[in-house]
Length: 79
Image: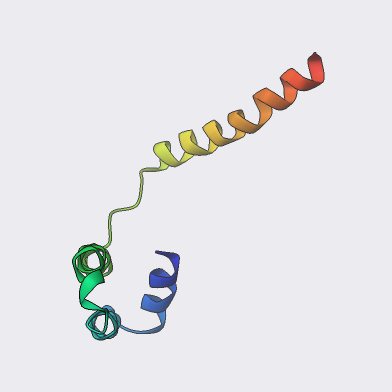
């Protein structure tokens, strides 16, 4: 997904989706069903990107990450 974000900043979403469809059309027939599902979700994400998380949620996620690192470390240091 990060590669798609970087690529879409270099070219238009229409160019990127066209290139991905071209590459996706070259997939072997045995891999097509699972590959096309993933490709469709990827193309949808490029053409209609999701809304960013609210600031409060981003802060909570960061606090949880700090807690997941800090709590076990503190417990090890205090034991």
